Amino acid sequence: MKSRTCLPMLMVLFVTSPLLGQAPPAADAIDPTVVGQLEHSGWLLVGARGKHYVFGGLAIADYRDSAGQRRIVVLQRDDQLGTDKHLYFRELGEGHRWSFARRPGADGTYGIWIQLAATEASPQPAWLPFDRARLERPSEGGALPTTGGATSVLFAPCRRQ
Image 1 (cartoon, rainbow, N blue to C red):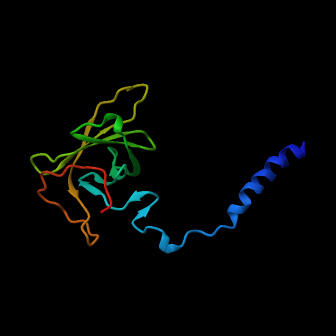
Image 2 (image 1 turned 135 degrees about the horizontal axis):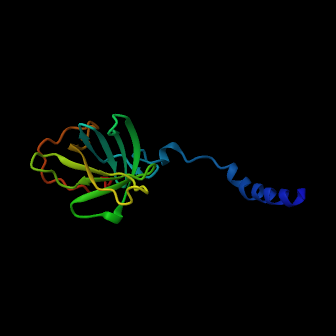
Image 3 (image 1 turned 180 degrees about the horizontal axis):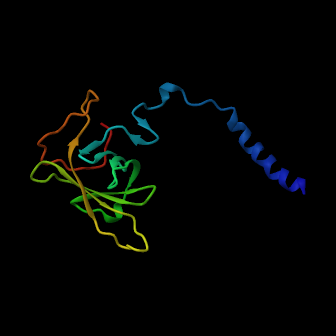
C-alpha cells in the first residue's frame, strides 16, 4: 500500500527537482512598469461615495455601501454587457455589477451605477444610481491631477506608451 502512494510522490520530485535549482530572473530583466500583467497607468473616478481605480480590465473600488460601511473590492471587466455608453465591471467577491458612463454629463461628471448581485428574492435586480464622479488621470510626474471640464474622454483599455 505504501509503495502505491510513494511512487507518484517520487515521480513529482524527479520531474520538479531540476526546476528547484533555477535562479529567479535578474532584477534588470523585469519590466518595472508592469506587475502581474497589470498596467500601472489607468484612470480614477472620484465621487462623494468612493473612488474607483481602473487599470485595463481590472479595477479596485474603495467605497461606502448604503449602510455606511467602507468596502474595498476588486472588480473585473464584464464585456457581456458592453455598450457604447457604459463600461461594465463585476465584483469578484459578491458578484455586484458596476457601470461607468463612458462620457461625462452636462456637469462634467461621470455616472456610476450598481446592480446588486441576484438573489432568490430578486433574480433580476435593477440598476441603481450610485454616484457622480470626476475623472482623474495620471500625469507624467505620477500625480493625479483633476481633469476639470474634460468633455470628450472615452474610456478605453489602458495601453503602455
